[in-house]
Length: 276
Image (tube, rainbow, N blue to C red; front, top):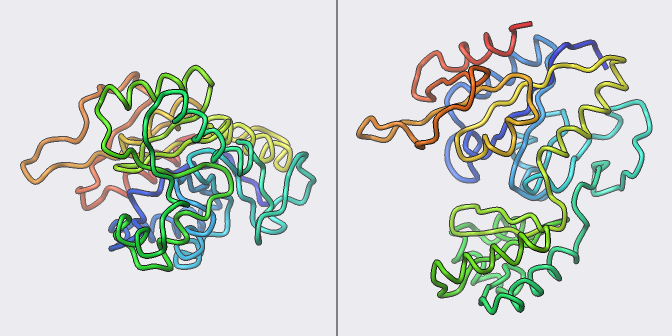
């Protein structure tokens, strides 16, 4: 591995959508980091199967953190050292953060039963039902439910009180519950912060010093990523009426904000990352 003083951790789901166009300028930003020898680790809620196409399309050759912090996926031969506790998953070496399936599926069944809340796991749907519920072609929909660790589901005709009760049982059992729009995921041990820390340990061993961790995220994923990063770049969106997304104020001066609608947003973000 070539020397670098910074590793970038970027929450990419809002920037590289499953359907539609990649965020303007993001591909050039990726190339600029490559030229500057700054590795960028993608952080995503998606499964390993879902990441094949975007990784190939953008030529991404660095690790990624999948299923909302459930596993760290390393390309073949990325680190020329042995990482303890790794397992082989497809073409990747994986550092498991959460317990592998069927732990997630079993946890979902347990929490639903204890809370008396009806849920529908994606694995229970037919291919046609899955495609209709996700609004995706059959092949892409199947990739969404091919999970290594967590279990994807949605609530069936539940009230806010039902959801609150379900969340409380999951909290008491110390399970990781994440919301993804209308879908939810449940895992036994998934944690983005821990995934980042485990990967930084490998970079530190390979480089023989600890690099800075720079986090890039939209408001939806900033809370899980920013606490473990030395520098933090928040990507803001604006509604058609000009209102800024989200209402939470930035917690400290370490968070730098940039608007995705700005024509020079990626030049500005690159300048933030380049700060020593």
